[in-house]
Each structure stands twice: as C-alpha cells, then as structure tokens.
Length: 234
Image 1 (cartoon, rainbow, N blue to C red):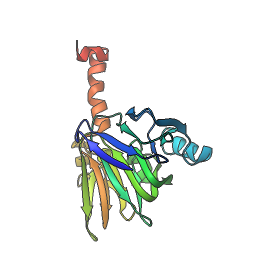
Image 2: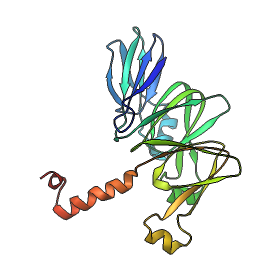
Image 3: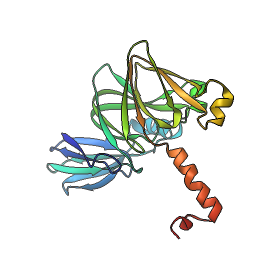
Image 4: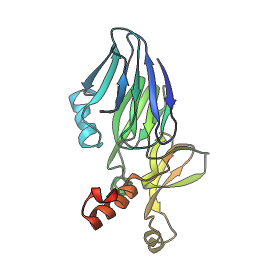
C-alpha cells in the first residue's frame, strides 16, 4: 500500500494505491474517485455495538467506508468535507492516539479504533464531547482539518495551551485539562477565547489553523441578518 497527499493546503486530497488483497477504511462520503477494480462497501467498524458506541458517544458516523482491491490493483482519492489540509501519522505497536470527532479521514493497515471517555470538565467544555476516538495498533491513520495542520512537539515537563476549537489530535502519552484562556474568567470571556486545553509533555498535539465553530458563527450572522444564505452572493 502506498499513499501520497496531493495539493497540500486548503484543497488537500489523499491518494492511496492498493495492491490486490489490500483494503482501507475511510470516513463515510470521503471517496472522490477510484479505479474500477476497487470495491467500496459500508461497514460497521468494530461490529454493531462498536459502531453504535462511536456514533452515539463519539459523534462519528455509524458506518465507515471499506475500500478493497479484490479484483486487482487500483487507486482511490479521498478528501474531507471541510476545506483544509490532511496529514498521515504513523502508528506503531504500543502507541496510541486520540482524535477529535470528525477529524479522522482514513485508517490504513492494522489500525484499531474505539472511543475513550473524557473527564467531565473536558467533555463539557473541550468541544469534543464526552468521548473521543482512540486509535491503537500498527499502520498509519490520516487526520483532516479546517485550514492547515500544525504538529506541536511538547518536551517532558513543558506545557502548551491550545484553544479548544483548534485541537485535532494528540498522542496518548500527553495529559491535558481545561484551563482559562486568560488570567481571569473576565479576561477570558471578554477576549473571545473562553476555555482552552492545556497539554503537558512529553508528547505531540496536532492543531488546525481555523476554528469550524467560529467560522459557522461568522456565516450565521449573515444568514440571520439578511434572511438567508443566498444573500451572501446576492
């Protein structure tokens, strides 16, 4: 299996070349185009109860796409729903990662996916909900984002604060908890930042340079003010 990220940046797509007998799992609706010899099916990753847990508790779709090369070699193009970048991350045995809901584009090779409960305060205020996706196994997985993706390494003993709407993924050895973005609650709220995630090293965190919720709120003001989305172009 070979893969490559094309048109990196705001219009990134993932090209995966499959050999006969290989397969991958992708977010529902992620396929852009494929070779005729590749087959695509809706699958419940982890069985019915595993899919139900991810859908109800993790906020993900009930079904994933399984794309397999049953009749011969072929290529497939995958893309996320939002305008933004994609990044391939290597996963080895003994490692694990957490991914924000809606940010997992595909899982390659022998990657296993489940859900992980968050602490109460993180579930209420992180923007990820009470459960996040938990990845382990071996292979590669692909994350997507709104805007560009930045990888932030955090050395042992150091901390890094990220606005909760910009978090995409983080390594399993990284601890985090919710904090005020400013020194006081008043300064946090009046600055427009509110709460943020404080990550503690060692580990890595991947962030997106744009906030989907903030963008949605920006679009919403035009819809409310002018009575419809068509007013944006009218």
